[in-house]
Image 1 (spheres, each protein chain N blue to C red):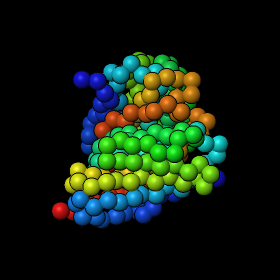
Image 2 (cartoon, rainbow over the protein chains, first blue to last red; image 1 turned 30 degrees about the vertical axis):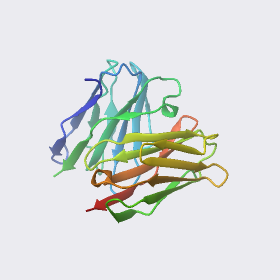
Image 3 (cartoon, rainbow over the protein chains, first blue to last red; image 1 turned 90 degrees about the vertical axis):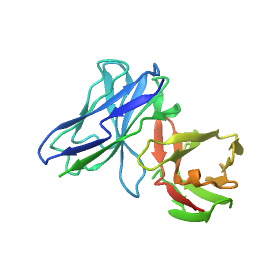
Image 4 (cartoon, rainbow over the protein chains, first blue to last red; image 1 turned 30 degrees about the horizontal axis):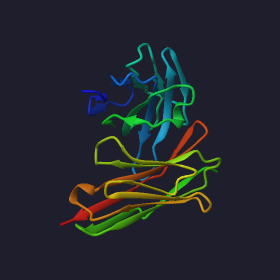
Length: 116
Length: 110
């Protein structure tokens, strides 16, 4: 069963705590992305990775960190420096790097993070 | 500024009726335009993707049109079903960037 999985589906965090969201894909895609979705707004790019051991900041990277140690995994850490972390987080992947944002992206089911 | 505007923000229609969703963009230079369907609490799923030279593309009951001159696209849904209730997102690609619209929330009532 190929696809992108994200876990957990729901996550609650106290203020001041770091939390890591998981994203795994078995599509053999080179490129992976993290987006944030807020009500009434379009998806905003946090970080993306075109290849293992390489990643670039997106439009709203402050307060977030990522790693890409394996092709199939791209975890996102929401740090205590992120001022308004409550949101729906979506992970995506596409076949190739190089110009990954021009290739069709496949999305995971999302993680809803709530800061208490 | 590169923007994608979608209208209406939300729409309620009766099952079996048709509807049309609009997308206007100011993105330049344009590469392609995609429509995604997003069910509540789920990730977006691609419906269609159109390049500069394509005017129409269909996927079952979904038909997307593109007018690159006026920078407008529409998504027409025929004979709506309850399962069409979702958010529909227009995404425009330019270079190596994507610009997402805020989406139109469609609710189909029986």
